[in-house]
Length: 292
Image (cartoon, rainbow, N blue to C red; front, side, top):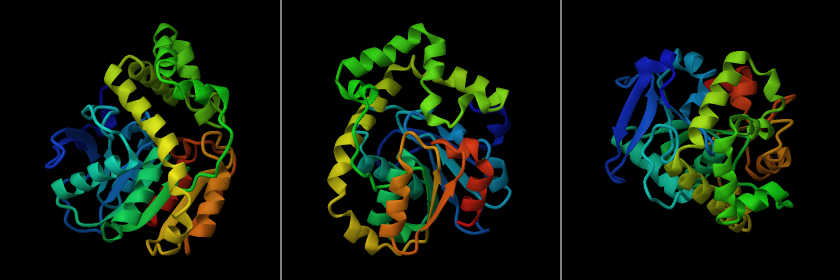
């Protein structure tokens, strides 16, 4: 998929020193040496850096911003790799080291929020501030719906995913749970989403990364919950949690629980917004990240 034309000046590929593959990213000021610590934006599962398109221009006017395509997705390399949360966190550390960035303000959405939260626990000295959008390490147990259970089943999930290649409209409609109202988005956004989701379903390497990440996350995250209250009680990184009131992917109750567990974490619930809050409520996200 091509980069967004308006962000062409920011396009950069970075070969990671330790992992041996390269990442695509938008880097607004690659040679910036002042103006505060850089901000690193990390997208969610199956997405790419373009998800930040409504917030990036404003943030770029303030200080250096880096929006990365996680490995396995978008225009980054798609290695045969574990695609676990600790692995993603290690990739982000490798990126910071390769770019010679000691500390960042970190903002993650969904899977990116889970990874960012984990990284803040494991490497607090590297994270100056943290914004978690519709995601984090807290995951209250809930009943899985039939669609999720089918996607978790090896072979069946891949078959369902690949079927979307035969029906571009069905591929587009698969995005509906991620928005409070997909049809209410501007036409330019809906056109971009239609194009992008149909590009994604035809990429076999991205499909592999999606299922390894998704299935691994469903197994890994519940195992973190027992020790999490004690871990979060010790967090001192300033943290802002932002959640869409109508999120159907990650329950807003997780955000409330996270804010109650982690001292000093601020919670904002955005009325009328769904899971992809950076697209549906960009003004609120800009305000949050601007304070990082």
